[in-house]
Image (cartoon, rainbow, N blue to C red; front, top):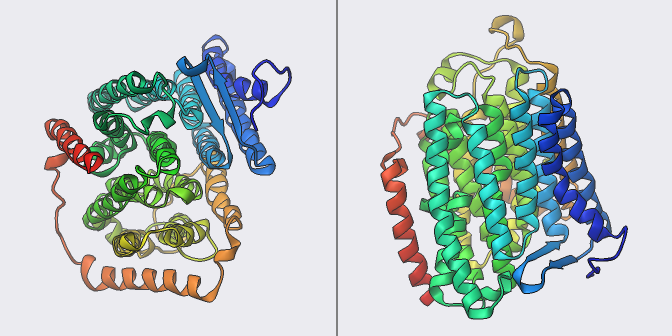
Length: 490
């Protein structure tokens, strides 16, 4: 359905208002600081409502402003999954921080980040996407550096520099596409020079934290404050994933490249996560792996993105309240049962346990794999079960026998939004519940737990961090670009 831009009170006008609203509210927060929390709440709720419209009406809304030289937007149920993820994660983070001492600046940046992520999700032209991704980079940098410590500033600047270098490659690729077709539309990748496709892919692979180009992600996510880590792992990296998914769905010749990176990313991320002894770094490497699941089956990436966003945001918020980030220390220091229950629910979901949304997402993804992908993705699925067994088998004792953790009301509301969302979203793919579909995930989880208990729990292998160093991240971009050139030419 294409609606004319001039049509008053149409979905076109509502859509444009919805896109602009978070930016207007973000700037208004500085004028009305006492309303900053409520403006952020309003922006997130508006996205919930818009996502609900996309699911209920199932439209295909295409907007084109300024012809081929300007903005092209597409809104459909695939976009709806990503928008809903952004809305729920932002709501949960807002509730988590509601009673904290966060300033107006923090809430304004969260709102601007929310709006720019939404804009990146709906853009289907290369220049508008570039602008949205750059705004995301700036807002994310300001949130990472919010504590103003030397460490936070360095991690933020490191993220910003890597991101900007990647987007420079992307911009050159976009110019080459325009030179070939006099259009910035995604469809212009068809028939574009190989170097254009390689450069654009490199920019998006880095922004999305995918394969070796995304090894900036573990340090950045693990060193940020828990609410910021929840936002980055839950939604920010997906701004680089959705365009790749759209490329794969739009152009048949690009689909194999996206799927190859999906399998490689899933296996690489889980290989690090299995051996990681720091809880936040393990979650960050798991994010890398789970992004691979989205790219491995582009047709169902939206549902997987929703379940992953809810799980990972919840886990980062929970881990921020554990007595330690070190798994060895956590094994020796029992945690409260209420924290363990929430850890277990989220870990069961991401492992693919029935009755939670992660089960349906895993089954749907596995059904949409090509034959050559099956072995690699099953290895990644077993590795995911091994990684999250670390949380499931943490010791826990009655509240009177452990040091009590202070958890405010906002934390519990955030958990209701995120973990409750996993229960509700479980109904999206109810066809998954047949005997064959249930047995395989349970066997995968059982195998993962067996490997964890018999082998990985006792290993003390230290994951190499050389490739995460700043200078090596630049080198990985060069190697990735060479690989992309070869794949596109092939």
